[in-house]
Length: 247
Image (cartoon, rainbow, N blue to C red):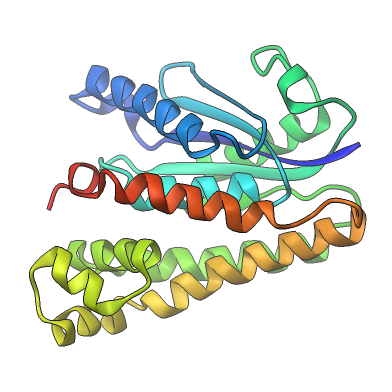
């Protein structure tokens, strides 16, 4: 048995987007990005299917959420944001042995149910976890944090959103200021007014909770992959940062 996580991602109002073919190409580009993020780190399965849907299966309880969060930060089409149904649990096969197109498993059903829950929301949130056996309290706590995080992110201006994304990548005020050709105090003002500290802290806290749950259920599995994965994602995005964020 090994710990894994999964997301099923859809795009809001994709059928009404005037740039449908462009959006589909962008999703294909995301698949390439994500495969690159995981290169040499761990096994994943990711597919672009059904026009606007991505499905990802990865080793580690927090991996799918980390990947989804970074996708949401670099997402190009703000009028058609992505939303992610997430789940985590154990798998009795290696990830690379799964045919993700045909996979029938309780985890896939949980992620699908979580995705459909978001799909039915009038004011759709970005993330929702469907927990596994006996996880209702933990699921409620994580989803509550995600709901509050979503409210803060929806209140951000475009500049505040960009500053928050770059802060996650670089972690330093001066580095973000240099990239945006703005003063450090101006960047810090956007950081504070955009509630970036709270948004990024909630991201970290959720990862910590998922990693702690994994450590309890799989004490023999090292958690170091979480840091390695994030380091890889940040490095790969930073190598294309101006192209990705268009500033």
